[in-house]
Length: 147
Image 1: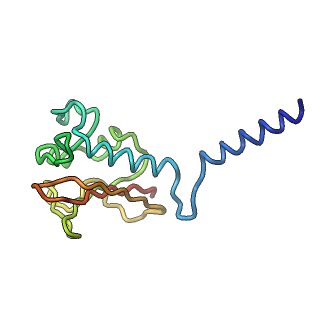
Image 2: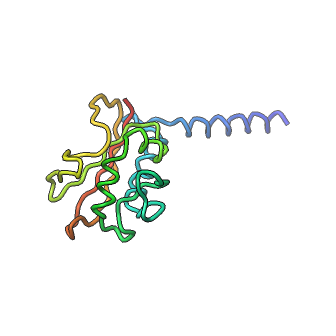
């Protein structure tokens, strides 16, 4: 019986440690998960599919087939940053950029990014997706970090 208790304690401790794992670069499982979730959300059409700033439940900037919808990109760029973080359900800072051939694409907000422009990241994780924008294969980069 004591052996079982010790075994269970070790097992619980192991999984608790795994959940709070931080690798040498400072990435946490939550940070990686949030970055992937934000990228997946953006590559979707969002919910509802014709979302706007008053009814958005899931931010998506494509037409559902990985083609970026300029109207949805504009709507995303106009969302309040903290509102979008809440919709993405992340406690981390984020930034989204589009690149074509390695060059930044100017977003509808007349910047080269959507999201935070903070430069004090203690750990940064990037996820890349490849949608079409104006019928050109484009790099969608999502950066997530903790300040």
